Image 1 (cartoon, helix red, strand yellow):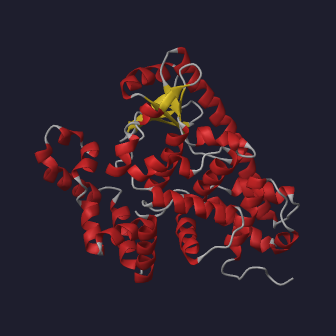
Image 2 (tube, rainbow, N blue to C red):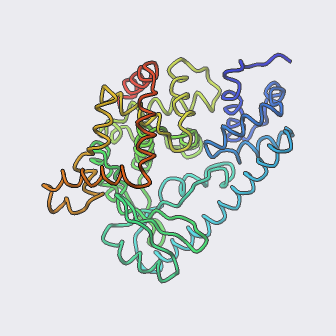
Image 3 (tube, rainbow, N blue to C red):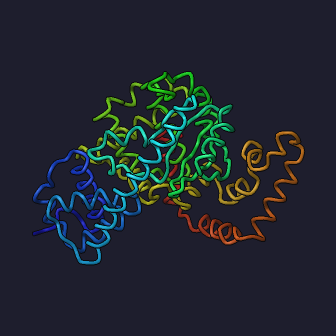
Length: 389
């Protein structure tokens, strides 16, 4: 049978077909099944793994009786089993943490995947590497003490969360803010608790409007940092088709934060990909950017966006070395009391970059910046302009 897709686009188109089947719970079309040769399945597995979707692909292939070579079959089975195990561990720890907070009167809001997961055809289809829960900043100290008493290990405190680890090594990001260190986004995100209402026990829930806004705000932050992954698009499809949460319901907040056009285009892209609509050239460019970045984006995309903003590689690298005061202040808290020390902190940062394990990473970034083509920069500028970023 003649290939339905060109060699260049086959892998991408087939993974979209498989994910459509996974989300809609429909059987694959016979013409698609015919394209799923062992060689094609091996390629699809590699791309799906990059986006933490190998388990979803494995389930669809198994349900449709699609076979692959023994090595790929073993990887697919392992991915499906691992996703099921990971989901059960996350659910157990999530329930335990919620129980601790309920018993001790600590108000909390489950975030992102913890809410969306239940609307997928199966919960383990929507994997996550951690649990995200928001509490009030004044409750952080007490929450940490309670979790430590239950043998949770406390990690680093970052810009918006404290890392906590269960005895089974499940990672909890205990958020005390959902701000993203972006002025426009944070102008709305800082008021998160104003959009929350009490549910059961000490649990609160965001209003539909703010829940939608937070998903798109977080997505936009990752998008301009290198990519947001295909899983963000599956979340959008689930929100709109299973949760009655279209981006339009959060129009006012999205416009206030300057990401309404971003939400509009990403919603349209999810509909194009998972409702089998024809892709225009802009949709193809967006998908190429997302697919190349993997689940959390990559350095090339991050650097390309930075160069597009800075207008040159030299200006971009200078900005990467001499970070703005706001960013430096949370890396070097002393600056909050003594901002005049900023030049000294820049110097310390440069020394650390040159004489510790991050030296190779810094040199790799320089090499990556110098290898980015003019064509890629043009495409990034088009994307930024169309999305209003």
